[in-house]
Image 1 (cartoon, rainbow, N blue to C red):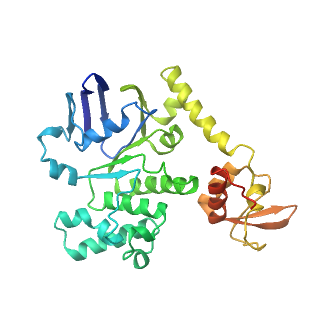
Image 2 (cartoon, rainbow, N blue to C red):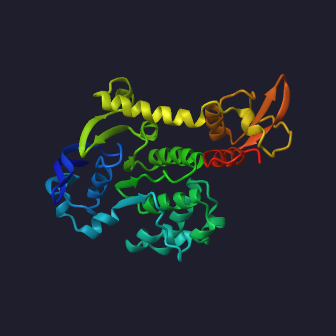
Image 3 (cartoon, helix red, strand yellow):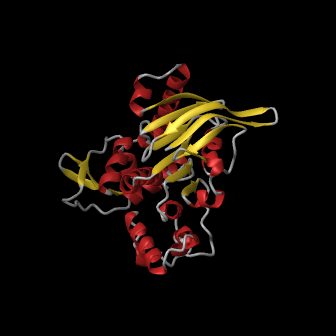
Length: 323
């Protein structure tokens, strides 16, 4: 569907991309990952011609990108950035309907699509349609940004580190959400991140880049089991150890001490012990929203998604979660 053939990009004496070739299959979730300066964002921006190659060609549906009408090309490609670019003077509905309106969709069809998409990301349409971006949380704004990118059912969706500015819980929620959306809409997604853990969680295939070159393209499993060289192995290890280091030693007991929930046991909630690791708690909260903490058959309390989110926000900012 999408193919780079011997593509290079230079700015005067600086080579940003050095003779890269790759293919992205239709419907694939393809992740570009690598350290800063590796060329991954430049590669992404070439797909909607925000940047043109110095050498080589890029093909979409076996047709050179340079042969497309640039306006029509960009309207057929969704684009989600790290810095949310919602129009502040427009409502959520108007932001989502932007590209469908440019494509002359009828008003009722546009509104139906906006409602359908808001429901898809668990934002109640009647509550959110008329809100302005300033009335939304960061995670909600990013959800609307994703919806705007997919509203007109594009063939390709480009995502440039869209979750890196979010807190850990919102980031995990949106990672799960974008995987569900991908399975639902079947569009091709090209996703840029510097986080190998995120790449492995999301990608059907991963393209690891360094200094403008492709180091390895493979499935997450093959990259973990058969790294191409020491750089790939070390990059993966560093990302893993960084995440583990941030959460190392924290348990359910740390969060429970901060929780304001009453000591009410809900039969439908999953139960955990106080010494359950925080990383395991995060996964359970994602699935169940609320967990009960039980020790020696005694209910000590409950932990909600909001409790965990607030705890992590304070912890990662260096604050005292007990204050």
